[in-house]
Length: 178
Image (cartoon, rainbow, N blue to C red; front, side, top):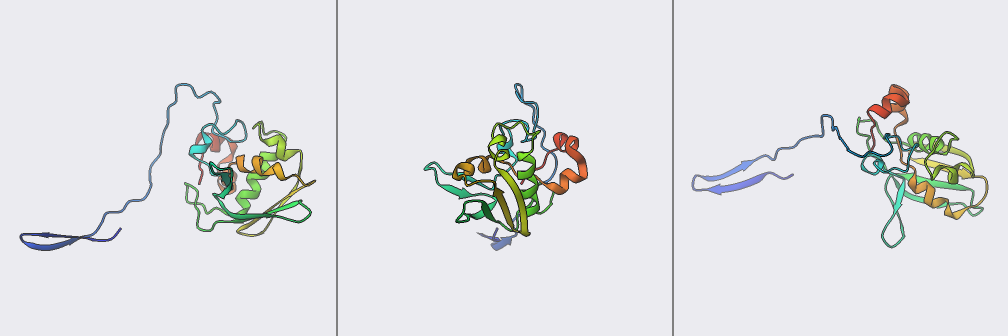
């Protein structure tokens, strides 16, 4: 914010704008929670939309628009999908978002114990993930499948460092997103 100058009968005065940073804890009570979890691996992200971001989403016209990813490309053979990630994004606890978080989240989302209805679409064609650098994430499928764009957009990205620090049960009690 820019300083504000106000002119009064006594002459002009300049005041600095006040700024604040997010702080504290937000507690939410919901009468009919339905799925009893904030972990995006165990339900269809009903409440996760408020906390977790995907790599990309679809606009009202059906176009792919980046959220955590600036762009993506699919190789000519249709197996590796390469995502260029946004820099400077932080999780709510202050951790920086990197390609390690994308790889961790997609791998976790694709695992056999994930009950999210979108997980089987990735799991059934999942070969590997890699992180060539801090802001490049590569998802490799077993066979070409252009519709993978939909389940990839439904995977919510979570902080690998935070889960390693507090564990899954700690994450379920106090989740953080971007």
